[in-house]
Image (cartoon, rainbow, N blue to C red; front, side):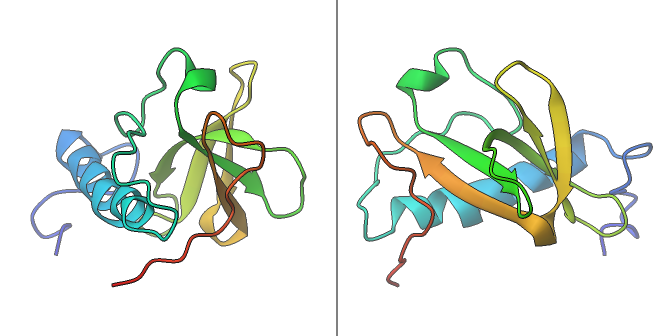
Amino acid sequence: MLERAQIHSDELRAYDDWDAIAEALFENIVVRSIQWSDQAFHDIDLGRYATLREGRARTPHLLVRDGSKNEWNVFHSIVSRRHPFDSVTWLKSDGVAGETSYDRAHFALQVPGRDALIESLKVEL
């Protein structure tokens, strides 16, 4: 449907409309799931999608790691390589960017004031 509307997912032809769709999916699936989880993060603010904000140590943020590695990195965005939304981009603490396939990605929520990462949430509807 999106391709027929000339909204392309590949990086060379994607533009602001595709980014807006990705942001809407992130807000409505990821952020709302966190807000309505049993952890009661109703007012959580993860910042604007696909941007990094200053002072991450003082704000909640998502982390991602490749399934075969132990290192957590700061989530940046979900991108399309072979299929729509099939890869995750992230940044290391030194600013170096990386990418892993969505199938291999593990996610966690880091919340200031909590010692442990939150690697799973229960959402009751």
